[in-house]
Image 1 (cartoon, helix red, strand yellow):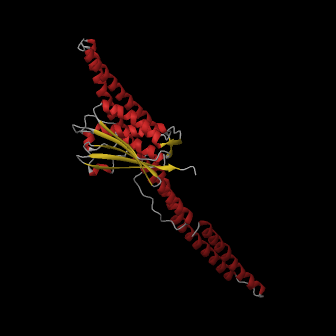
Image 2 (image 1 turned 180 degrees about the horizontal axis):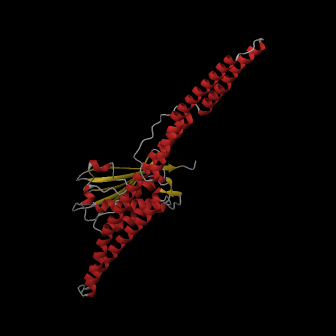
Image 3 (image 1 turned 60 degrees about the vertical axis):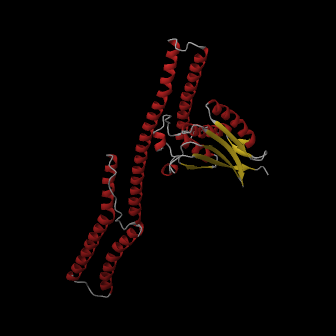
Length: 354
């Protein structure tokens, strides 16, 4: 029962009972009978008893339904201020408003616990990210330092060797630049400040250009590159070209990282399935274990093969892919077989201006 209804009933009883007793005395007077002192004394005693009993009942009801729950809430607030959230607020009040207050307070307590747990996870992930990035930056920096020292010491004593040293330095600095860009983009993800510039994008034109650049880079690294695009020439999607390029580069970089065959192959393809344009980046690398497939798009996740890879990785590349595609109202998934290779898929809805 609501508090205002209980108060109304209580005060009604307090008003009515003395009025009834006073009415008895008045009726006696009007009936021509002079009330005796004993009768008046009895009425007064009855009134005092009724008021006393009513006061006791009210006190008990107030203590059980209001005072005790409020005392527990006060203790709970004090515990929260001390940083202690390990308690339970029982909902024992029969008054609606007090009961709702207890429920809301306990809900707040659980939310604070979840927020604290999320903060702990986030801090741990940030520490892991810094550790991963530091490790991954150290490798190319060490290589660059070694090759620069080789040039300074005259080890690169032929044009061919000098050219190889310079190319290696260039590739390693590109690797560092990619890691720094990945970290910078991750900071935008955490604050939901990704600068999208959506527009109508012709799929064939976009993918032809991206494949030409990616294919040239892959062939320079000794990869066989396969490109297939069966999407009709007029097909378009609403997307941010820069971020779609980031998605492709991340997926291709992931494929390159875990290629372990003598003849390394990476492919990019696109096809139209109903109202979806489906993109695929495939490889013939080491594949992904069944226990890792469901987690690889999670932030900071690094499977067993990743931990054993000399290439390392920040663990956020595929989570960036997932975030971008979901922000495009698309979807992303993977199919893989260990030892045979992996296919990374993402799909966007075809745009129709009709």
